[in-house]
Image 1: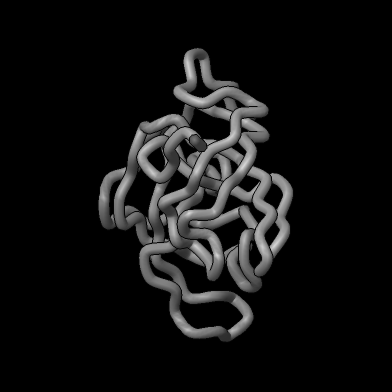
Image 2: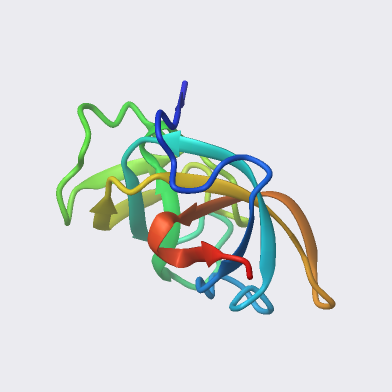
Length: 132
């Protein structure tokens, strides 16, 4: 239910360098774009359903990963139930919207000494630059 990007800055197959630091080893890693989409993307805070510590400013969840979210964009402070399972305890958690962006959002394949991940969700335009 997510729309492929009409005019993405980076195309599927492009090699990029990530400035995002969503997980250890990610910042400055090279990645390959595996998908580009036009949607609203949110940073959220939530308490995991598995009893884990509260998560603040988790980047990113897309509008389509929220349960019955209504019309995008949701406003800062809005509540929504998460349908995504990016991390343990995320699915079914009630989240608070911290921020929203309409930048193109990407899935990327990352391979570093620390990790290998296919279709990592999500990285936005401002967190990527072309590889040299």
